[in-house]
Amino acid sequence: MPAITEELPASGPALVAHAAGDLRIDEVPLPLPGPEEAVVEVRYGGICGSDLHYWLHGAAGKSILKAPLVLGHEISGVVVRAAANGQGPQPGTAVAVHPATPGPGVARYPADRPNLSPGCTYLGSAARYPHTDGAFSRYVTLPVRMLRPLPVGMSLRTAALIEPASVAWHAVSRAGDVRGKSALVIGSGPIGALAVAVLKCAGAARITAVDLHPKPLEIAMAVGADHVINAADTEAIAAVEADVVIESSGNHHGLASAIQGAVRGGTVVLVGLLPTGMQPVPISLAITRELDLKGSFRFNDEIDQVIAALADGSLHIEPVITHQFPLADALHAFEVAKDSTASGKVLLSFGGGEVQ
Figure 1 (cartoon, rainbow, N blue to C red):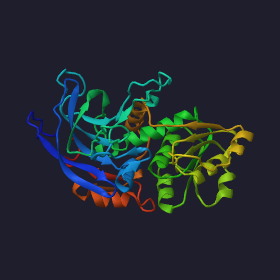
Figure 2: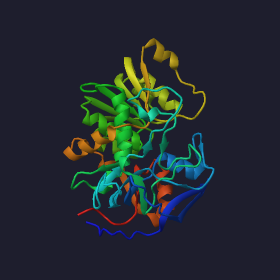
Figure 3: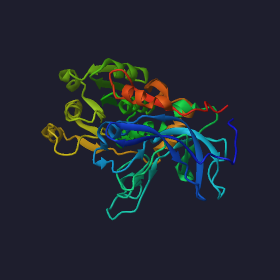
C-alpha cells in the first residue's frame, strides 16, 4: 500500500504534445481538487492511436492541436486523496478511469448512449478548445464519477488495458448476441486483438483474425483467435463468410475485406476510424447481401463489464501488452508503438509499482 499523505506536490512531470513531432516531458501544475474530485497517482498508461497522431501529425482526425496538450486516457492508478465531499473511492484504492464526460448539445441522440452526446469531452483530446488535458502525468485530478475501483489483487499493469478493452467490448456488443456465431476481425492491432478476446469471452464459436503482419496475428492467437489470415489474401477472407465482422483496421481496404468476408445477412461493426471524407468500398455488396453496417464509437458503461470479466478470468487480454517503458523514455516508447509490425500495446510506467 502506498504512503497516503495530505501533502501533495504542486506540480509533476507529464507527457505533453506541443505540435507535430514535438513531444516533451514538462513539469505541469497539479490542479487543486474540487469537492467532487480525487487525486490519483498514475501507475500505468497505454499509448493509443490518437496519442500517436497528436505526436506525428499535430492532430487526430479533425482534432487539431491549438495549444500544448497532456496526452493519455488509458490509465490505471491509486487514489491518494479522496474527494472532499466523501464520495468515491478512498485513499489507497486502485482504480481504472472512464475518460469521457458526456456534454450538453443540441443534436438528438438516444438517452442510453451518452457516448454520442455532441458536447462530450475525452481526456487527452484536442477536439474542443480549450483542450481536455489527459492523464499521462505522475498525479492527476479527476472527478470521482470517472473512477472505477478495481478488485483486490487485479494487476494495475493489466488494468491499463481496461479503457481500450471497453472500446472493443462496446464494438462487439453492437453486433448483438455472438454466442455460437462465427466472427471475423479485420485488423489485429490492440483494438482488434482486444475484440478477439471479447468475442472469445462472449462465446463466439470460431474467430478468424486478419492482419498484414505476423506479430499482430500472433497476439490475436494468444487471446483467442482460432485461425489467422494475412490481409493480402482477399480470397481467403471472402471465403470465411462470418456471421459477425469487426472492422478495426481503419482503412478502406480493411472495410472492403470486412464486407466481402461477411455472410449474407451478416453484421459488420466499424470500430476502426477511417479518414474523413469519401471512401472507395464495395457498398453494392452490402446492399445485395443485406448486411447490417453498424458504427461503434468509444463506449458507455461497458467498462464495468470489462472489469467484472477480468476479475472472474473470462476475459484474457494480458498478451496484448508487448512493451513497457518508464516516462523518461516516452519518446522511445512512442517510436516503438508506431511500429505495428513489432508491437502491440505499449505502456508507460509512472512509478510506484503494484498495490500490495
